[in-house]
Image 1 (cartoon, rainbow, N blue to C red):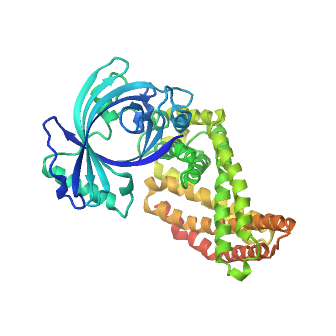
Image 2: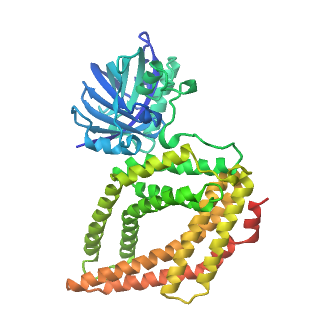
Image 3: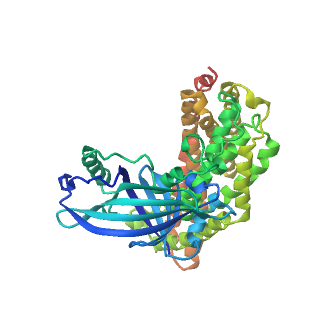
Amino acid sequence: MAETKREIERKYEATSRTRVPDLTRVPAVAEVVDRGVMELDAVYYDTPDLRLAADAITLRRRTGGSDEGWHLKLPVASGIRDEIRAPLADTLPGELAGLLRSRVRDGEVVPVVRLRSARDVRHLQAADGTLLAELSIDTVHAERLPGGAEAAWTEIEVELADDTEGTDGADEALLDAIEKRLRKADIRPSSAPSKLSRALKETSTDGDTASGGALAPTGASAPGGAPAPGTAGHAVLAYVREQAEAIVALDPAVRRDLPDAVHQLRVACRRMRSAFKTYRKVLDRDVTDPVGAELKWLAGELGVARDQEVLTERLRGRIDALPRPLRLGPVRGRLRTWSAAHARSGRRRVLAALDSARYLALLDTLDELLADPPLRKAAGRDARKVLARAVLKDHDRLTARVGRARALDPGRELDVALHEARKAAKRARYAADAAAPTLGKPARRFAKRVKSVQSLLGEHQDAVVAREALRELADQAHAAGETAFTWGLLHGREETAAAAAEGELPGAWARASAPEIRAALTR
């Protein structure tokens, strides 16, 4: 069973003659305890074209030390990685293989580097004996596999202890204080973010590095086929590439069930699909429409879990807000049971989609589209004019839908019309987001105003969906011999929430459709 550890560390250059200064002069460090030298032997794996290294991901099988086994490290931020560990085995554990699937696809990982290290470990402890951080002096020997060049170096690592991480900024403050002492001893930060990146650079072979020693990007990151800067094609492809990279990067987070990961992956799918529609004069719809259909499928599979998560949170909040005398019957328990059943189904559906051949085919198609984009004539034109015109066209579409909704009386038909207006608002907002790097502040202001309309319409739709769920919960409660009073009360409050959103719409729309907001886009 894999386990996860948040790794917060900093690396420093060293030589065999480097001497670590007295670190008990660092605030909070009362004692430095020598823990001896351990021998580590690690084989690092990657695809033959080094896709994992290109995305700062490391996969290794290590023997020696207290944590021998398979280790997968995924970047979180500068100097911070999540290390997912699995027991030592001859082959890559399936759980780790799944986390690599969006990058490896149907390929395989092979040994690329072997690192043998002598690690001299010292524990930095507080006055009460609490471990604050571990400092190690690593003497490293790297060998390129199979049977390639070799390199050797010495480096210093300072890694926070598990219990220190995330405690009100104490992590960064402690590392800063240690670094200050090291710098005074003329020990400088390493230029390499990891041992693997340094090993690949120092044992590089033809074909695996780009100019300047940087690893060549692969997959969705490849910039091939991009038109000239300043053109509409360049701007739209940059936005599409950003979403494609987000899909690949978020895949492991969704599999790990990290907070908001499903939502963010779904948004990336929607943003790209929206861009294909909005900028159809830039990218040929004969090519992008089938891709958009697959993105819609994936977003739909993700949506079951995400929508259930949002709905449960909403209903739980409604129940918590009720005075105790109005919470009749086991309402919290029934919501918990109902939600868990739906959540399990949604989670299975998400994982099934990510493990499907259809999903891998979509990722490959996105790579192909970015490598050889289906550009139309407008792709070579000035980005400002083409993008502004497309954004305004989406706004016109939104205007028509809002107008139709406002002409209807309350009821089912109005609910549907407002939902359609919400989707149009989302598309107009995404169009402005894509244009923001080109159009600047006017596009960002436009997106902000439209987002307020989208949020209001989203609140209305959430109230509509919540009413349907409350009817289901009321039916279940009644069938079980429980009172349905609380569910009916909440249903009425959701009706009030929907009516309030409808009442606020004219004001929000007036701000989002102001002539100066539109005019600013074309200046």
